[in-house]
Length: 118
Image 1 (cartoon, rainbow, N blue to C red):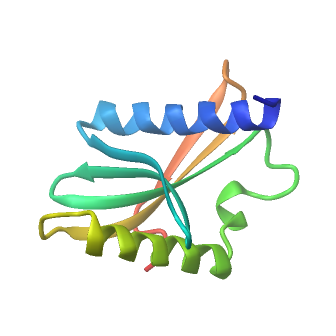
Image 2 (cartoon, rainbow, N blue to C red; image 1 turned 60 degrees about the horizontal axis):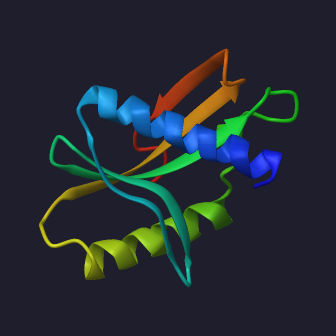
């Protein structure tokens, strides 16, 4: 695995641990279909949460959250709609959250944005 992929994987694992500490349950990691991919699908407080994780070593270029443009949001929404319609078996409120992780494995900052986009 290359360094960039490994760093991104670490970010997803760190985001997952963040949700687990809140008491959330992992439903699926890296769900994919033809339309796109969702990093984490979490169930927490009767909400089905589709999570996009953005990991950066610094904010020199841009804030990780700003890198989720409308095109990416549409792909996430389509993928989430498919998952909810065909894979999820209960009524739930859905939302789209973003986890931004900036720094290194030794020293990082997490930002959690609930309902990042609709």
